[in-house]
Image (cartoon, rainbow, N blue to C red):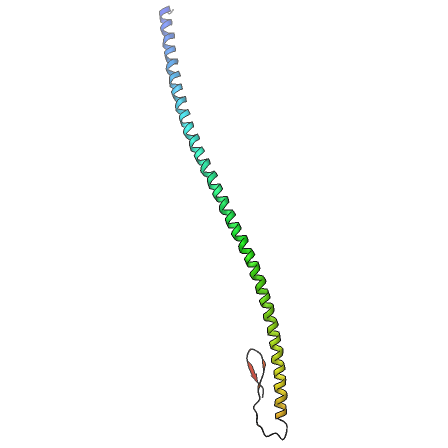
Length: 138
């Protein structure tokens, strides 16, 4: 049977071991807390950077959308102007075509009058009609 002194020494050894392990655990907890604080600081910096980046991205997208809206408005105005010009060009082409046909008819009637029997003025047939190029009538 162990003596009282041996039991006291064994209890003291165990208490010393517990104290040593407690100090080691406290040191580990302090290291973990330090690492956690560093991680939290890094996450906070990352969050701030992401928030600022999203704000800039939002402003940039808004600017792009506003520029696109203004461009679309200008293009709509230009399309309207081009449609008006095309309408006028079509009207002018129609009017000029009618004038050409009228002049061709007048020219043909004058040529027929000159070509009547008994007329001594020689003439060459004139160009009539437009089909991409002037055609000569025989």
